[in-house]
Image (cartoon, rainbow, N blue to C red):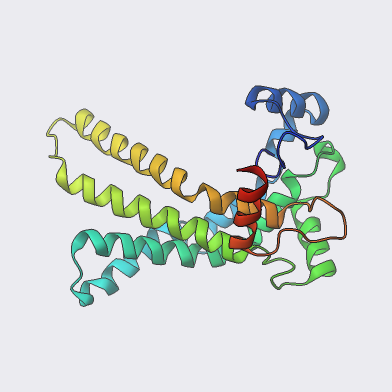
Length: 224
């Protein structure tokens, strides 16, 4: 909801995170927080239970033949896994964003499958329909996985292993937390662009947000 707001002048803007939670709960009920839950669940279990880590391992094996430094190989394998993952999950993301930006009550909006059918019927399967915002999704997943895996495995190999299993768990947990935080900070512009492209346009019938980098430029120019 925050990502599709267009500055403080947007009449539907939320004042804060708390205001957003409160408004959704009052207007859309508790289930309003679970809109679009099915598409990401389906994306996680399709097709190989965890595409992100599976493809990362495959790219890592391929890069072993390229004689790259380990640190660079992890980052490149992460980039490859993110790009592959993005192609698979993007249709699910389009349906999810469409459902989550709907401000009607949970019981009043169509199901995930009906929403997908409506998108396909109206705009098809291409870049205007079920694969809208693909470039931004490629950027989001590619950048995140590149930074996450590159940072995580490089730092994990530098910091000494603890013999105490509890301390070892905290070591890996801490590295993962920092890796995910840094990756999220770096990839969030792609995520905002994706939401703008896949979400409702400011003026019905007019497409303002078309491509990833043009959308980023527009947001930067208008909102900083």
